[in-house]
Amino acid sequence: MSLKKVLLIVSGGIAAYKAPEIVSKLREKSVDVQCILTKGGAEFITPLTLQTISGKEVYSELFSLNSENEIGHIQLSRSVDVILIAPASANIISNIAHGLTPDLATTTLLATNKPVTIVPAMNPLMWENPATKDNIKILKSRGISILGPSRGKAACGEFGDGRMLEPLEIVEALERSYDKKGPLSGLRTLVTSGPTYESIDAIRFIGNRSSGKQGHNIAQAISKLGSETTLVSGPTQQPCPESVNIIRVESAEDMLNACKSVLPTDIAICTAAVADWKVLNKSPIKLKKSTQKVPPEIQLTENPDILKFISQKKIGRPRLVIGFAAETNDIVQNAIAKRTLKGCDWIIANDVSLKTETIGGDENKIYLISEDGVDAWPLMSKYEVSIKLARLISHHFKDLK
Image (cartoon, rainbow, N blue to C red; front, side, top):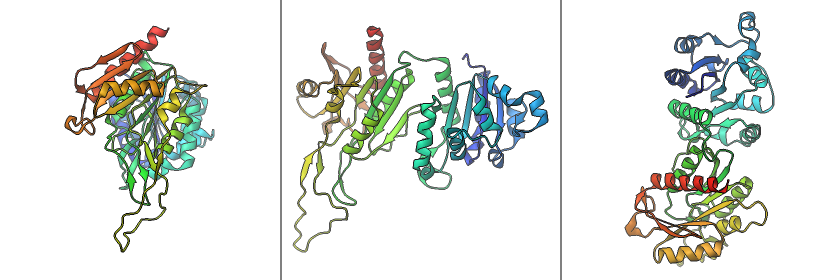
């Protein structure tokens, strides 16, 4: 690992208790760690804890004469390879986005010319708040890397996105981003994953059994090769892959709009099992049984075709568009026809009939169809499929150079 020195900023939040482990794991890799502990962070851990593990003085006060004489916020911001903020609270994210400098940490960040990586940690509703979303967009537009957050149960008991990644995940992601750009570095990728839910009424919907495992694995594999990856995911229990930007949606319309917001990209991989139909006469309230016990009439209309939309864009079409064809019979023939109809470059056909247990399972039998013909892959895990596909994409772009 060529990463030699990290400045770790620990802001306020219960996840601050994981900061010493981050320091420890970096030290195990012979990385020199200097720490800044904010006033909020010091409510959860002590400077002495970080100082003991890092072997260095921990800085907190902006106007400390001792600190300014010895190192100063300018030198703090310039004497490291990367600045890591973990946990990054909603407060410090807001301050950075708007150039506010109320303390040593934010002043140092404003003065730096080094790469900055932020690891958010907060209550799920705070993470989903439009103000936080806008702040994250601002930071990304400035080239600041965002790791996570992950999905799970927060310290307050609420469930959702907002948990800080685990220390080992953070260190490994930092190592990859700094030490090895990867063959897809500089490219942007859009991946769709999971099912879509089409509302019938306030609580009922039409959906499918897609688990999102294959799409999420692909997003992770592509990201690990250096591509800036955005995952647009329908409802699924799959955790957000590390170093991947995620947009969660519900309906096909939602997914299309999310994809439009991400485009243009260099690569688009449409693995999501998008519903072909949506309910035209959906009800805003729960439909009740009638006294005659006659089921309500449901009128269906066609959903937007996301793969076709991306494949046939006149301006800003991705250089490589890959679709998925989930079939139960005539697998290859149907997929070949679908590739022609949609206009994508590659299409990946798989057998999703009930006997295969592909949907929701951990294995997949793939047929990769391109202008070069049909390539039948052996049965393998969805993780292995994602790794193989990512390598093929890498080779494709290498051949284009």
